[in-house]
Length: 313
Image: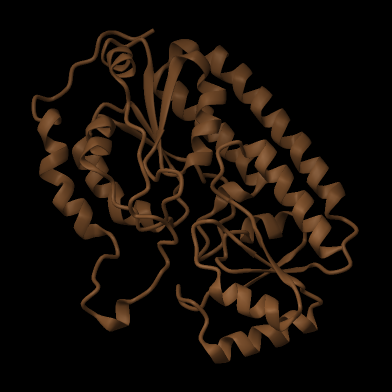
C-alpha cells in the first residue's frame, strides 16, 4: 500500500519530553478558586488502549495507516471508511472528558500517525493539545472534520448530529485519500456506504421525533445542541459555567422544567448527577443516562432518539 516509513530519531523519546507541556495545557490550575470547575466531565484516569506490537509493526512497515482522532465516535467513521487499510486511535479514551491529558504512551503512538482527523469545532482538548501534537509529529496530515458544518458557538459536539456526521464521513474520506490516494476508489465506496447508513438513521430519527408533545428537553452538560438543531428540539442545559448548579439555580431550573413539561433530566456517564437529581426530584421526575461518546454510533444514536421520543411524549 505504502512504502516503508521512517521516523525522526527523536520520535521515540519526544513523547516523554513533551508530556510536561501537554499536562500544563489542560485545565489543571487548582490553586485559583475562580478556576474551579468540572467542565472536563470525565475520569482523568480513563484507560487508553495502546497499540499492540502487531499493530505497530503494520504501521511502521506501511501495511496499515494509523489515523488518530479526538473522540471515540470518530474512530468508527475512520474504521468504516478506511476498512482493512487503517488502524484508528482516539486521543480522548472512552470515559474521559474535555480536559483529559494524554499519557506518554499515547503520545508515543501518535508520533507514528499518518493522519489526524481534528474535530475543528472548538473542542477544548484540541485547543489545548493540537499545537503539541503537531510539534510531536510534524509529518502528520491534519484534516478538519467539521469543514462544511455550520458550527454552534460554545458546542464542540458535532458528532451528535447525524447530518453533521455525514459531512464528517465525507471529510474522513478526503483525509484518507490525502495520505493514500492509491486506494481512493476503496475509500469512496466505503464512505458512500457509511453515509447511506447515516441517511437512514436521520430519516428514522426524524420520524421518531416528529410527533412529540414537548420540543424541550433538559440535560446536565450541553452536548446535544447539534442533535437538537437537526430535529427541531430545544436543549436546556443545567450546567452553569461548567459547574454544578447552585441551590438557587436548582430552584430556577425546577420552574423552567415545569413550564416546559419536562419530567426527565438527561445526563451522561461522564458527569455528576446530583444537580440533575435534585431538579428531577423537584418535578417528580427522573434522571436518564444518554452517552454522546459511545463508539457504536448508529446503534447509540438510535437509542438516544428512542429515549427522547419515549421520555418526551
